[in-house]
Length: 300
Image 1 (spheres, helix red, strand yellow):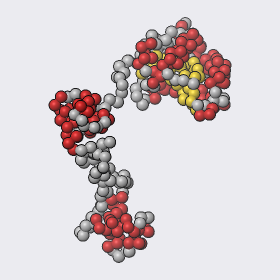
Image 2 (cartoon, one colour):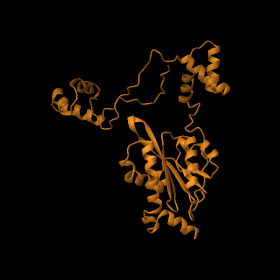
Image 3 (spheres, helix red, strand yellow):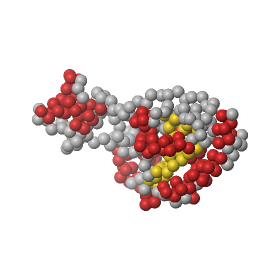
Image 4 (cartoon, one colour):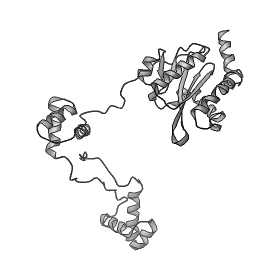
C-alpha cells in the first residue's frame, strides 16, 4: 500500500470557503470582550475549537485564519523513499511500462504491488491514464431530406419487479417520426443487433444512417456488425438525439407508466400503441400528419 502524496496537494478537512473569515471574526469578538463560551455558542462551535483558533490568531489581527491541511504526515505502510526512487529511475532510464518495472523489482527481491508502481508513475506524471478504451471516429451528421436519412436509436432504463432492470429499445426516423420499440431484460451488442433486425422488418423505408449515444450496447463491435452507416452522438449531449428523447418521454407518459414493469406485458402492449403512434396520432411537427403519411408523402 502506497500513500505518498505529492507536495503542494491540499487535503483540507473542510471545503467551506467562508470558514477562514468566520474563525477570524470569532477571535475578534473574543478580543473585543466576549467570552469564549459566548462566541462558541454564537457560531455553533465548541469552546475547544474557538480556543485553538485564538492560539493561531496573530497579535496584529487578521481577516482570515486559513484551513490547515488534513494530509497525514506519515503512514506505517507507506513505501520507502528508496523504493519510490528506484521505480522512478527505472522508468526514466528504460522508459518501460509499470508491469515491466514491477517484474524487475520482484527479481531484485523488492516486494511492491503492481498497482503501487502504476500509482507512483502516475503521480510523478510519468504515465497517463486512458479515459476511453478506444477513440470513436466522428461521422458527419447528414442532412435530413427523406425517410431513413437519419434514424436514431436509444434505450430507456427501468427498474422492474423485484428490483430487476429492464430496458426499452426505441428507434425513430427523424424525417417522418416513424417509431419502433421493444422491451428486453438485457442491453448489449447482441440484443441491439437483434432489435435492429426486427425493426428493419417493420420499417417502411431503408435506413441510410443510424445514430446512437455512446452506451456500451452501441459500442465499436455493434458498429462493425450492424452493416449500416453508424454514427455516435457527442458525449453528454442528449440534444443530439432530441427527437428520440421526446419520443421516449411520450412513450413513458402514454404507455409505460400505466403498465406493470414486466417485459412480457410491455411487449404485448407495444404493437397496438405503435400502430396508433405511427398511423393514427397526428404530430404538430409534421403539420398534423401521421408518421406513415409523412413516409408516403416523401415517396410520392
